[in-house]
Length: 268
Length: 268
DNA sequence: CGGCGACTTGAAACGTGTCAATTAGCGTGG
DNA sequence: CCACGCTAATTGACACGTTTCAAGTCGCCG
Image (cartoon, rainbow over all chains, first blue to last red; front, side, top):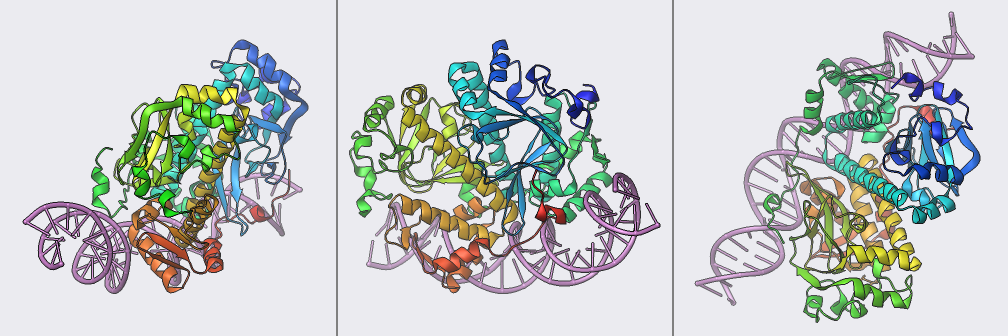
């Protein structure tokens, strides 16, 4: 996939009124064609809020926590993050959003986002009218199925993150984050080649996504580098030793349950 | 609420064929009457799988990870836990299920649970036919709304847990778990009085729910006890100093983001 | 050139895990 | 009824992972 359709800079220069038909995220995530009948794109275009293709600079907010939203944003290009903020300044990234990702399926059914969406790179996104997007769900079963499977994936991702944060070491978490993003980029044809990808996350993003500190992330990544697992500089990342990285992703077992019977539980 | 309708032992002796009309969880969670029109209970009874009210002993599994499930279980009485298992024996509890809780809304839309459900106490549950429960959603808007808000709550809970595990200390997490359960029991009228409740979790459950070890949980709880915050023995817990406990629930701030601009982010 | 954000590195403190030994609690069967 | 065996909880010593604090480098942009 040529870089012109990638996630940085260039895309934002496209004529914003062209719409989904030529959207670079056309084939990704919720917008993906294979799952949807051809007619849906036309209908989608109908529930699209006119004049609502926005461009946001890196590090700005796309969705505010307290606002009510009658519209559902979808990422067209760029990376963003779903973030929970604590009053004392602590932050936790719930998910990294890539082109084609719907910004929280929950917004489809209620106007209250429980979190903030922040642009990581410059981001282009479009917004859709909730009411009408929602009623489209009931007209088009294929679209409903697409949304549902998207929701199930969202949930599975949240559950995975819970396990990672609760039961895995920092090293494991970072390795898994990298592998997971590589996987998602690969599925979207957004790898530069088999092993290299644009990777705009700063170390503090990785820290907020893995529940670690930036300083510790720096240490682990340096170690990965020294071990020849990855190359990571200038917003781009190369997987040098995929198998090694995978091994880091679930090594360092820590057994935590003091109840031995748990490890040989009889069936119900 | 008399103990006979509580969650331990006695309920299992009720005639199991009586059904939702007299279900002790009748007013909780997804089964809650205030949200649903009167006719729904009758319709629910219709999609209930005959002969499918089960009783499971504590520590047994209700749902297995690999199985396909054409039926959706709902907890009638007792406590259960949604659990992810790692190959090396590590465990993470995703949520604690109380009477009236639907066992993972996700099962409504797909047969593949991505986790295990384990009984904490003896548990009574009924199962409903997925196909028909699902089609009921489209007939009865009030039921759909009930399910949707349940789903949103489930998601909000997962997000909260992610933040807790990623960014809060063990002490905070344990305090929050206790407060959260007290809240949920209170909403269901399942407190023995304003401050005391049946609390069947073992320390290893708390450990698996908070991502800590049982030994460490023991230490923190002992400290809570010494500080006069709670009394906790014989499967029952009393809140002695609610305010103090609340303070523990978000004290011990740890700032983790080295990027100062994050703490004064401009709006988009 | 200066300034600022991103990253690196080291030393020390702290939270949490691990291991082990001991006690308390509970259900079962003699 | 007590004794036995198993599970649950407590406690202490120690190890390790992670944070905190601090100083310093690098690169980019105005």
